[in-house]
Length: 238
Image (cartoon, rainbow, N blue to C red; front, side):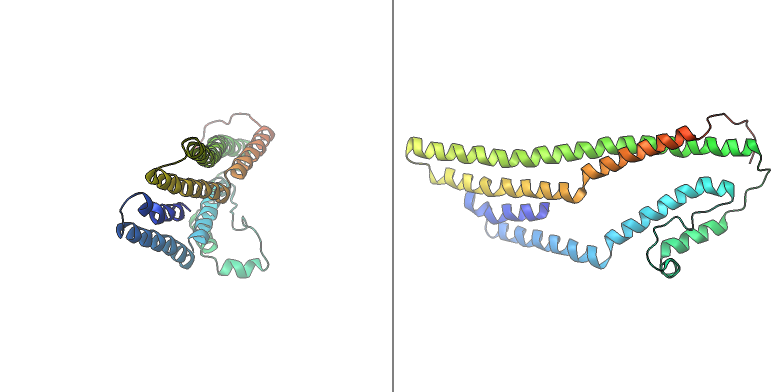
């Protein structure tokens, strides 16, 4: 999105300065970069890989606690159609199952003290850290949403103010210099392009929805935390 806006700047730069053919070369480079990002990102499946890595990371994180109970997260996945067929073709499921097989079964007596220790590990090691993460994430996402919205809208407002001032100067003086007219033309096209790019980034990033989901997760985690008995466990070796 930003490369597209910068391409507009390169195309308009000759209006205010003698930049050809350098501006044309820069425009070609920016267009090539934008096209290359789309082609390489699609052919290398960047988005799908990111989703795979994220899913695997979440599964391995949950495995830390579930392994203490002799359980695993082999079925901790969204089911789509034939789950067995999908699992055979998913490298993340294969990697997860291989990791599960490398973990020994827990040894010891599964008594009340052992269960209490696991509960405390869930509360302190998982729920507590996840609440802190989602609190920071919600604040960060909201900040990004507000900043992008403010700057993007500000660029459009600035463009409007500049054009109103230009029109007022033209009718007040009856004439505006050719240089000033070119400068106004340059910025009246560039600023909205930058503003539109920022709005596109805001929509694509979906920061407001991400913040809402983190806040919802915080509420669910606090409910789960309240449902788990808060007694402390005695110290013993696993």
